[in-house]
Figure 1 (cartoon, rainbow, N blue to C red):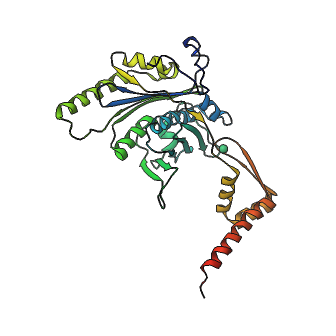
Figure 2 (figure 1 turned 90 degrees about the vertical axis):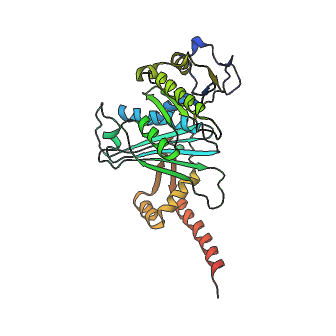
Figure 3 (figure 1 turned 120 degrees about the vertical axis):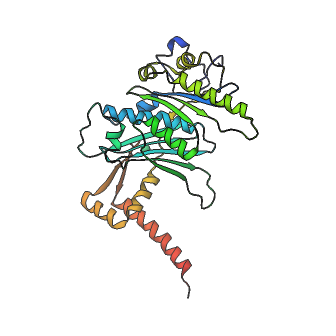
Length: 331
Ligand SMILES: [Zn+2]
C-alpha cells in the first residue's frame, strides 16, 4: 500500500480515523502478483449524491442506477482511449431508461427516465423494472474523443440477460469482449460501491502450466471475493474490504483515482437538439408557449430559448444551407 494518499489539491488526505466522516470518491486498481487476475474497487459517494440531488428516485431505481454508476467507473478505468463510455439500459417496464456516462478522467453523470404515473413497489428487481416483457436492452457505447474521419462510436447491444446489474454486465463482457469478468455491486442513497475482478487474456507463448495456474488463481480470487455480502459492501470502505477479502494474497496496488461529477451539457448542444427537432416543431411550440424551457436531465441546468433565439437557430442553418446549395449548383 502507498504510505500516504493525496487528494486532488495535493494535500494529504485526512488520517484514517476521519475516513468515515469525509470519504473521497476513489477507484483503486490492483493486481494479484504473479497471476493473470486484475481487480478494482470503487466507492462513489459525493458524486452519487450530486446525481441524486435534483431527482428523488424510488429506492429500487436508486439501487439499479447506483450499481450502474459503480460498474461504469470500474469498466471505464480499463479503457485505453481518451473519450466517453455510455452505459444504458433501455427498459420495457416502469423504467424506460437508465443511463450512466463516464469519461476517461472518471467524470460521471447519470439519469433515469420512468414511465408516467408509475408506482414502483419497494421490493422489485431489475427484471420487473426494465425487462417486464423481455424486450429490455443493455447497450455500451465507446466514443473516443479523437475519432478518425468517418469513424463511428463503437456500440455493443445485448438483451438484458440476468436479474442484476452485475450479471447483465458479466454476460455482456463475456459475449462482446470475450473477457472473464466478475462484479460485486451495491448502492443505496449514500454510497455506490463495487468490486471487479477480471482474468487477463493469455499472452502468446505461455505454456499450459501457466494457463492452469491462471485458472487456479482466477477461481481462488473469485471465491474469496464471493464471500462479500451486499450489506458489507454498503458499509465498508474499500481499503478495509481489500484487506478483509484478500489478506492471504500478494497484491500490488496502483495510484488511486478519483471519480467526480461532471455534466457536459451546453447551450450549444441544446440548440443542436432543437435544430434536429426541425423548424415546424419548434415554431409551433413557441406559438403555444411563448418560449422553450429546457432542463438538463443530468444536472438540472436550465436553458431558455425565446422566439428570437429560435428564429436565429434556423436563420443560421438556412444561411449555411444556402451557401452549401449555391456551392453545389451546376449549370
Ligand atoms: Zn447538464
